[in-house]
Image (cartoon, rainbow, N blue to C red):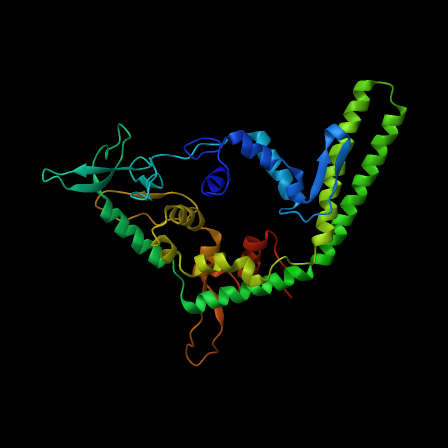
Length: 336
């Protein structure tokens, strides 16, 4: 958020170099009115629904507060730049240490990019690997991840079916949320009874804090009940970017945008890739959506048999369908 606001000329800056204080960003991110609620403790105004529309949900706001409270934010690495997007992701095949990269100047004064391992004791320690060789190998790997049009069309159909079935489960989800909300009401009533009967100021304060926390949780559940069954966007709007990535990861990689390239690495591969000098890249472990696209294929007619759908790796079509649904929605959809 700090980088985003610093990139906007119209937003007032704190320093002459165009930067903003982190404290200012924290103050912005802790305001509940961005979630459509108001709360002013110094005026004894407890958290309540406002008359304005929120930019985010209260649940998202609470997650942000927890992340701010936890801290542990790592600074952005300065050694990752557009010249070497694979730096830190490809590892030495001998010692599994991430390869570093640099520019080397020849006697003629021309600069050449190289990758090398800096782990002392490794057989490949400080042995250079031409960066264009590594990049060429990776380009070939990325192109191999691009599914055929038929596979992608089938996967899109499966996503849409799972989306429709998920929408049909909304009533069951709303019943579960209502039950959870009723349990919160009972807990709040029990704590109020304890406050009335308590003589200890410490116990009363502890109960009041607990009640306040439960009230916030109840507001989140009320928000969920209000929004369940009303999709905020269409299927195409929700999954437009995901479908673009799955249809051609290599195209996004070749865009040259460093942020997009680093995102591709996280979305496409489950772990870092090993590479040895004078050899090819190790076969990587891809993420679940790409595995599903690899696993689904068309069954050809053999000896006059019927054309249908089969899956590689011994998975039945319904199993693949459930797995894709789990990958997208977090829970399997029922298969009729």
